[in-house]
Length: 278
Image (tube, rainbow, N blue to C red; front, side):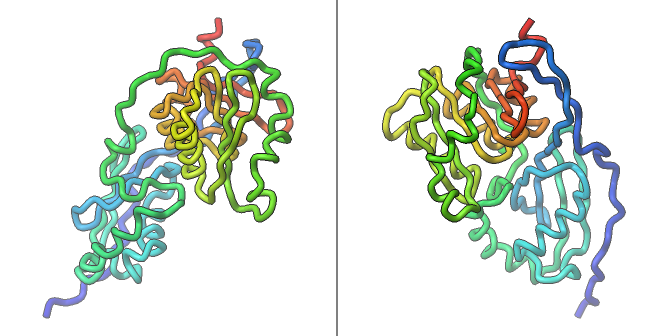
């Protein structure tokens, strides 16, 4: 019987040293404004014993810690001793983690894979390639930004479209505003991705055109929400929480209007980029 292999803590390879970068924003009146730091995110593909398991959108720091914690917290391994090595490599927005685990844990992985696809967290569980996390998507036709008055008092007006959230909390909302600036309806879910999916589905099932309107999300705005908006043909996305840097990059690249609505200051237009306003 072969000797039991010891768990191996791999020294961290070179990784991104910054978790945030500055981005410019302007006002809806297109006056020059300022810049602010936005959190970065990357797509981290995780493979166990050479088999792709999931792609997670994560902040590019402490990646080995994340991989080990994800492995334990998701039940892929039951003890850290089942993880023999973790090797992380990549650049830009795409990284890969190659994880070697014990035979016992690897045999149990097939059952666990079926459980991951339905989680409501921040990852892209079940997506097995970085190419799927960072897909080639068609750009939208450029669209006008919404009038500034549409967003006045918007945070307060969203309350009537969040009955579950007001009653119980712990849910996100996505709300549709039509081309006249009228809030029409919203959808709620414990998963921020799910809430936007529900809104997009409601628009499709009710055959309501999103042309000239916008979607408002109460959650932070990361890359997955940009993907969903682009695929659904939503030209403007308003987020009550700051977007990630990667979300801004993709919104600018694909002509999606992206606006952050802070608690106590004017709306911040991150896309289109400031130089396009000239």
